[in-house]
Image (cartoon, rainbow, N blue to C red; front, top):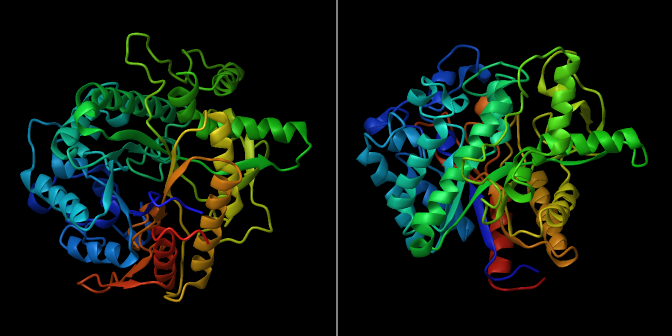
Amino acid sequence: MFPREFAWGAATAAYQIEGGWQADGKGPSIWDTFCHEKGRVFEEHNGDVACNSYELWEKDLECIQQLGLTHYRLSISWARLLPDGTTSHVNQKGVQYYNKVIDDLLACNVSPMVTLYHFDLPQALQDQGGWKSPDIATLFDSYAKFCFQTFGDRVKLWITINEPYVCAKFGHEDGIHAPGSKEPGIAAYLVGHNMLRAHAMAWHSYDSFYRTKQKGAVSLAINSDWLEPLHAGCTDDIAATERSFAFTLGWFTWPVFVTGDYPELMRSAIDAQSKKLGWSGSSRLPSFSKDELAILGTADFFALNYYTSRKVKPGGGCGKMCMESDRDAGEVLDPSWPICGVSWLAVVPHGLRKLLKYIKDTFNNPAVYITENGFSQVGALQIEDVQRSGFYKDTILEVAKAMQEDGVNVRGYFAWSLLDNFEWADGFSVRFGLFQVDFADAKRSRTIYQSGRDYAKIISKYKCGQSE
């Protein structure tokens, strides 16, 4: 069912697990700043200590080994390596930490997949304009080259930027993620643009200077729901679904995989809404310069973060300048879909299969890694989390069908997450881990959930080459 070389993984991110927010010369990130402002995060939670993985890495490694993972996806804290965001000052303690993590993984026959940017921009760079500044692309490229140079002899799978859609929309349109800006209808498009420019520069740097010797692969992790019309035969719902795809998945995949530019449907919708609202400036969706490195072709595989699905109908605008009005598509849940934990997370494993088939058909059958997929728990702790166990079993079965019946080239699956961790604006109130972390315990003890034991059984079965 799964080939022997299939990557069985779990994923984490630096700010969500590491803690040590100002240990050993680390600089502050935008999430340090955001969490230390009142009213930003559930019950004023923060990632100052989180799972304390900065001090307890060996405990994490034990968890990884207990699951029998072949791969582990982690992110590097830019501000831990380069406290002011630039290579003018390198924090050697940070370099030592990530060297140890990578070396320990390899010693246990676990391959690292390393994300360079998972939401935690150095505050020093935010102070210079952050992702809204055109200069950020060059700064990111310098950071990426430093990481390729330092770790690339051992790391063969790289993610430049995790979920640029979330960084752009939640951080600069809705203001619910760091840096907490609310500039509707303008800033998110600029941030997304600069993230694509930064990604492309880093990919080209890898391609030009490191690929021949290091023989790795580089992509960016794109989040997408599966979307389908609320009423299958309704032309308005079908058109709204196409618009919704253009504004989410298409925003970052069209430039990289299809045309080197944004979806025409996205640009025309934004420009039409601008005209309607009397916007007199240039297009709110920036254009790629012919003088810059090409965006098209800057992904060696397709990295997908999938969590849920939606039915789509027209509407959902705010009546003024904002992304929702530009998109003109309302998303609703099918009442038959169960909800797990947080209200947005409907459990739709078959949506992943449909999305994988869509990716194969739309983007010329790329190699796909599912870089995040998970099931949340809120409220009372349930170590015997049978629903989550069932979710993983059902989802992995859908992945197998996508591979066998639909011919999708899926290379790996990474559960989100290895550990319960700091779940952004929800703090520690939402738990996605295969291991429970006791945040009331100074030792941050880790306890395997039933779902972790069952995931380990699935991995063990397929790693041995069993077909059933």
